[in-house]
Structures are given as C-alpha cells and as structure tokens.
Length: 181
Image (cartoon, rainbow, N blue to C red):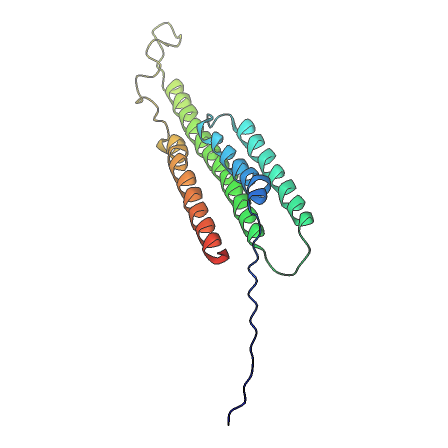
C-alpha cells in the first residue's frame, strides 16, 4: 500500500509600491535628460552657454546617482534603477558630445568664411591714383557658403535624441513591468 503524505502549500505574493520611485528617481532623472535638449535650440555660437548647461545637468545627474546609491542597501548586484540612471547619464554625455560637434562645425564654417573675406580683400585692384578700390570688394568670390552641417547637427539631434529616449523608456518600463508582475 502507498503511504499517504499531506502537503501544505503557502503562496505569498509580495509587491512593492513603485510610485515613490517614479516620483523621486525616474521622473527627476528623465527630466534632467530632457532638459539637455534645450541645447539643440540654442545658437551654436553660444558654445559656453550650451556647454555650461549640459555640464550643470550632468552634475545634477551625478548627485542623483550618488543619492540613489545611498538610499538602497548595498549589494554587489546591478539594480534596474542603476541601469536607468546610467543610461540617462549617457544621454547627457551624448548631448555634451553633440554640443562640442556643433561648436566645432560652426567654428570651421566661420573660419572658412573669414578666409574667403581675406582672399577677397587681397584680390582688390589698385586705382589709377594708387589707392585701393573698395567698391567691388567681394566681386571676385561667390558669397561665402555656410557649412550645412552647422544647423543639420542640431536639427538631426532634435529628432534623434527624443526618439531614442522615448524608445529607451518604452523598452525599459515595458520590460520592468513585465518581469515584476
């Protein structure tokens, strides 16, 4: 005859309220990343202002990273909140790189324009009196071309950064809610 065993099963469903984390960690971090996009509408010749804004927001993100690390128990595991904060920080670093790229392209276009003006001035002819004729100063050269990449970098960034950040958030929160339910 078979032995009869009794089996007891206890199911405990535990859940954590995530609203507090959304308000104190995820929302501020994503807001800092979104505020960086203001740079894309600031004129590239205002490089110090653009860089200052980006660096200030990156430092605020670092403060948020350190503060979050102190809030949670220390573990050797990589937490989802750490991943989210790290990716937001990388978006800010990418904005800083974009700011530098836009500034370099703007400066190169400006230097090219100055060289064309100098060449035009040196090509001026002398009049019969020996004085420079400055009435047709730039007639020998076409109008200086602005570097088309000056504004294109900012225009592309205005679309790429928000799209990539939105896609990141959809994937992150979609997977987070899928695996925690």
